[in-house]
Image (cartoon, rainbow, N blue to C red; front, top):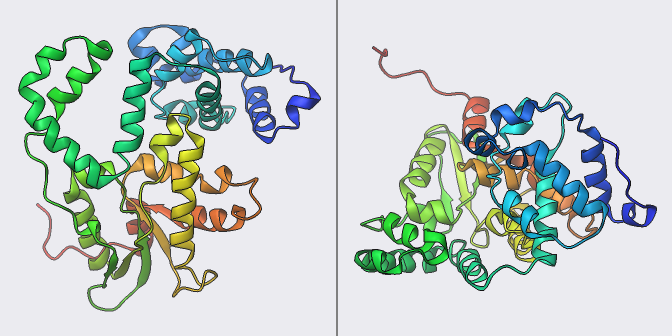
Length: 321
């Protein structure tokens, strides 16, 4: 794809990256077959290729985002299925994340949208607050029909989907060390996370049991928390980087370079969080005070399945049927 950014625009590192991504796109359309919003809606602008054209026009002309760009970019799920089928290796993730930051900076959303997005951005990354909100939503569920179509029905849907019972707390609600069973074969840090830790804490508990049975000592630093994905996907880059830096500080301190006992991996059991943590090095690449530490953390990040495969699963105690 031909681009026409000025030299002054290309002096911005983010624009320079966007330019490289745009120029690698060859308009083939392979991405449309794996994009869930395009498959569902059939609108070219709700495909990765269509969004790329919208983003190109917006960034090249250095203009504020309009309603059309906001509507179609908001519909992107960031599932990144398009990147798995792209023959040209277009890094759509970095491009759409840049577009979201541009939208947040230049577009003023309707009042109710701003309220809802602010609520989610401040509530979900804080497990204590989120847990209290779910209890309140459970009590408010009978009144869901009264809110009708407020916020296009989103508020009503949120109340109707609130769990009938808030699950018990996870072991990861407390920082500390979970020792390996038997001989220690590895030492890993684990992302405690935020929303998953409230909605389904059993996932975290099961992950700790698996890791310790595999011989891994699991460390949960007190300062590590939300990975920053939620704010990042909303274009709230300042809030996202605050979470990123808190996690980088906490995990780097556990490495030998950071003065700790050392880590063999940082284990993550939520794919969206894992994608973001593996991108920490890119997110802080231009910050001389953080780029090295962030790159080290990204290099250690592993999905729990990746780590289990690398360390080796034990033989089954009984033959499978």
